[in-house]
Image (cartoon, rainbow, N blue to C red):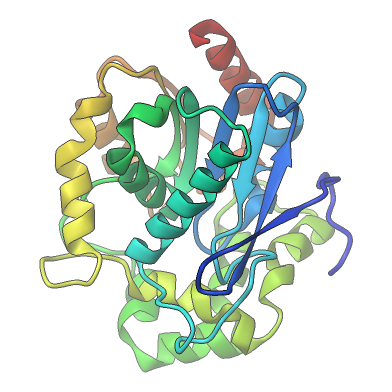
Length: 299
């Protein structure tokens, strides 16, 4: 593993019942209010590093790497079902473990990005009593508001053998995200940190399976869970919500932002005109203090 700039953390491991080991960060005082941060594809807990550094003095920052991602185990298909449902089940098991170890049962702040939104909000719909606040960044937790429209690069990875070959053999998805997911070019060492967990074709399987699991219509494997989550989201209308959005995201574009605004008109929303998909890379100087202020004001 190369040097990881701004990631001075000592990771922990949680062993699931299936024998797989999940890496996660647990930074801050054990009795501090918990903030659960969920990454998407093809990033990992490294994406949240600056928010952890900005909050861990007053909050307990818990940041898992999904199975197959980051520093977690990277099993083959015969050992793990790479599905949205599996991700939600993994998260439920990890949080239950932390609660047994002394974390509070209620008052969790859920911070989400990319696939983390669908994983985290589907879990929240399962355990709504645990959720105190929600921080949303360039993500979705409902069916695509644009129907079956999908950027050509994602469609290639989702539906073609060529896309599968490019992702597994050439790390095209992670490399592309590190380049096109930001508007301010990453420093070489930061780009290297984002790509480091996906250094071999075997270690890229999860990045492919996430793309292939994108639900667009009934019959897709994740569709029922996504559709149900979309129906049940309204129950969080009474929880404080912060939206921080990079407006130059070619995947989670303004149509997704407007859908969040429509569903949660009372949310505190911040738009970053010169930020892309990895909004915490492009706009961390503004976004981290804004999230901290939101947490202080609503806590």
